[in-house]
Length: 404
Image 1 (cartoon, rainbow, N blue to C red):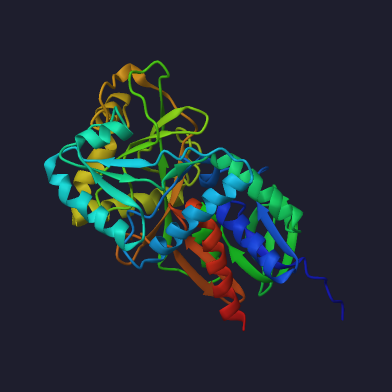
Image 2 (tube, rainbow, N blue to C red):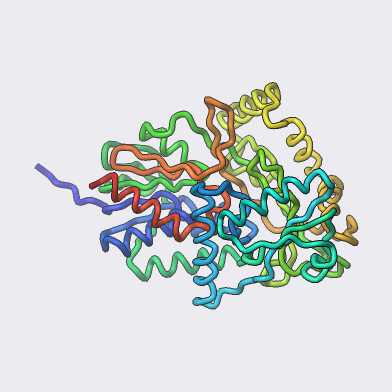
């Protein structure tokens, strides 16, 4: 009988921040052969390399949730990681401001959540806010989050990948997952690969990989594109750290915000536009009939039910599609902004938002499910970048419990 040698002990699909950190943790912990495949020519080509670079502190997440616990720890560890490796950080923190008195209740809810999660925060009056962010505007009070920082996500991705390679993780780039080929084998554009255990970190395509393994069939990934603008350098608006609005706590999007990046640029965004293709970065490129039908059906259900005031949220997002609408949303956060201050920003990112199709609900917390000899990271949206180092340990611990 011919015995075909195994390609690797652990096969990780997806070279985003979650795939790389899990692969690195598996290699360091067990010293076995770990291989990461990705269809792109470089790591972090999608959400991991296209996000705003904000290292969240853990303000928004319900106490005791997985997101809260991993974000708080991840923030500290990612900041330490960047300092140790000389990766630039903007550590001026974040202010969350109110645009009307009705938002003060939600602001105080964030204050209580932050304290419960062990985050250093302070409620500011107008004078105190001016000391931290002179151009920010608020009604009544603002919340200061000291531990929020900003990095260049692409620098972090390159560093993580290089260290993983040095520790023995193998990468096969331009290698597209094409399907499940049996209990321990997948089809790829570079031929069949056999494995002892599979870890699905495929981001925008994580549901397709999971469904091929009979896992998470009630879930689907719906893509939302985040459009950014860049603040004109000559603008009267000066931003030291981050200026955020009070979000609508009923949905997972944080709204347009100002972020001062380590290189001195200030970005504004993102919007949250539902898409008809998982990689619809521009125009109709990447649109598929399947994704189009899924998104249309989902939006129709949400519109008809109007759950959590979906119609008002949708209308707010639609207004941001135009430069003028985006400006009107952004100017409520700062003093002195004019429409000419908005320059075309960096390449947009696409959020891989998991939806429970049985309930038509956007899934807010991280979701990890298991199949036969496989683990599937189905929902790893923000703050996954911030949380990636402890999140990798969490997933590897789950794998250990499953295979014992």
